[in-house]
Image (cartoon, rainbow, N blue to C red; front, side, top):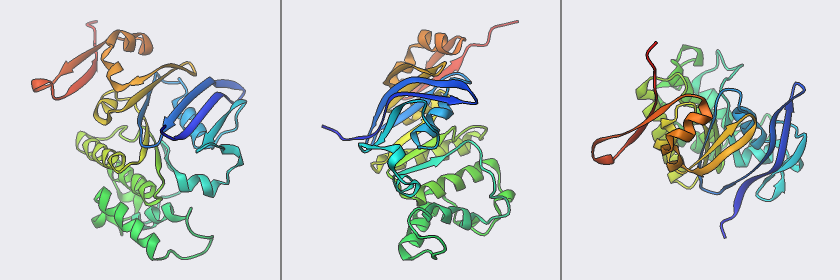
Length: 262
């Protein structure tokens, strides 16, 4: 039987007095690729932060490799889960190299300089994300796509077995989207567990694996990514119509919302 990497059981989360997640139960196994979709306000980012152990629970439990998340130290969690949120504050003025090196803080004691293993992990992350020419640039001088690769490189340098990404391709041009998908697929192909929040429904199709749909703080469906071919169900989830298009010889698929004439 495949060991479960992370499990939520009957999880309810309140934020600012409002229930955002209600009675969520799910399992994500080691090495899975999971996309989380749903309309705005469905609870996707809250779910990801909860799986990362960053939010208190009103009810239920989250377990990491069978251990209650709330009994683990942040350093222990960070060695097993790397989390890239939607927005980042506090890094403007820092060089790219310095930001990527923060991914090693889970592995070194405070105020201790990085060692050879840490520098090797950073070098591998830099290579994976193609950032060698940007290492001495300040983060605030980079484009949105370049910055996103820096955050991802810092997460890869963490060398955690699970990677949680909140809308990693949002607002990126097609070339940067393709590059980030390549990096994510390479991480998963190496045995990593990948969990990604997606607004673009073509991202789950590119990543494969499994899709979890949230609606109003509950799981609407949890199935293999092929479930996205049911455009009627997608229409009910998002409140708009979708069309599924197949590429030449059926090698690729793409989903598009249907724009009605005024």
